[in-house]
Length: 124
Image 1 (spheres, rainbow, N blue to C red):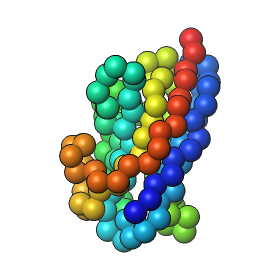
Image 2: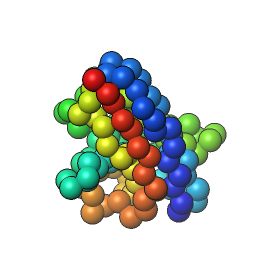
Image 3: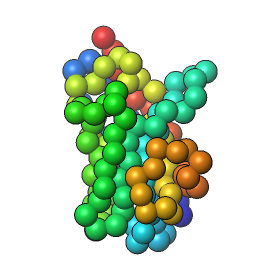
Image 4: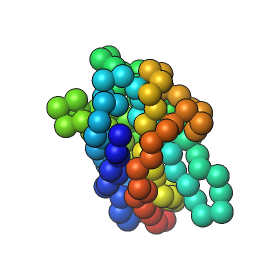
């Protein structure tokens, strides 16, 4: 499984960005994709997750609930993270990760495959 994250950039507070995570391999048959973010000197923080099985269970961290939306496109083997109402504290390197467990896990230990990070900068 290989993951390729993209879509980061710089935006002012209140703005929006959409991150993409394109997956290769069989992870879209059964598994889950999660998004994490990390600020230099801090631990990686779980943001959101979605199961790749039909229907798709989604889960969000409290700090992004109502502002971020995770979704998937089977035809493109891609998971998106739509980020609206961005705040300066959302500034971080964002990573997507894949788990073969068919649940939207918040536990970093369940994610086996990781993409490269994409930087999101939100200015006030």
